[in-house]
Amino acid sequence: MPNPRFRLHHVQITAPPGSEAEARAFFVSVLGMTEVSKPPELRGREGIWLDFGGSQLHVSAEEPFRPALKAHPAFEVDDLDAVRARLTAEGVETWEDAPFPRRRRFYARDPFGNRLEFLSRPIDGT
Image 1 (cartoon, helix red, strand yellow):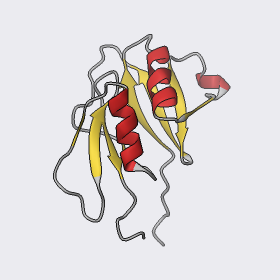
Image 2: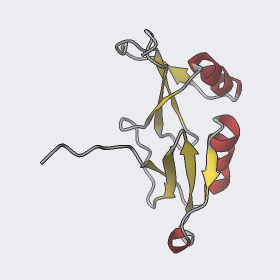
Image 3: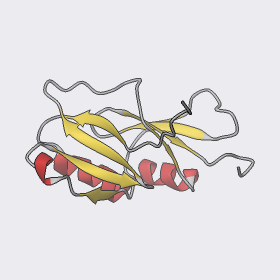
């Protein structure tokens, strides 16, 4: 049997119940993601769904809520410096970690304390 092809559909992170407005303010207004409608069967559940480059980020309510301090989505962005400047201007702390092969990167936390990673495109352009 040939190996199946995989493509990321979505990543789910959690937030405290009732935090949809704060999630929209951060992920849509600050980061520029696009909110997408949930399917009718799931519209009664708290949280928001977002599109980023053809994949989705689902921010869902969890009680009790615990932020993901280590596990995280990593977003490849066209202009890493612009994303970092935008986050910094909004008062979001960013930090660097060990080098990543052929890429620049930094980390930040969303308003709920979840860890997020932002990566440049490969430095050699591939």
